[in-house]
Length: 171
Image (tube, rainbow, N blue to C red; front, side):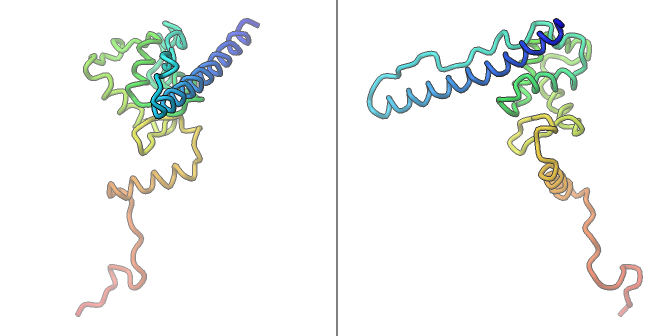
């Protein structure tokens, strides 16, 4: 029973985080419009407080892909995010990078590389952010993946119509 209640609380926390983000965006818009009118901003609290959204032990003892996917799922309503944001979330959630022997200065690079290579779980968007593969239309992802392979020279172009290469007449 407590597992179901915990899941319900987590779902509500995600919903609340989305609502708070929307409120902050609305306050920012009001402030911008007031500035255009020559008035002082009305709201000083236009940032969303995100601490507490992840338990301090949320990712402790988990694999990097599992922890990153869980972090992205928790912030699903806010969409894809940068590797830097994921790294901060994992640190906040107690992920043990020392167990992986990842030096502090290399963590961001190694995390981004790990996410980019794990195409079964993550999708790297053209703007450099990461989301869960399941969030996106698979047809779009396949086209993007084919274009990437073509640009990298790893997709063979079909042979031009006509005689096969080995049967060309010599001049």
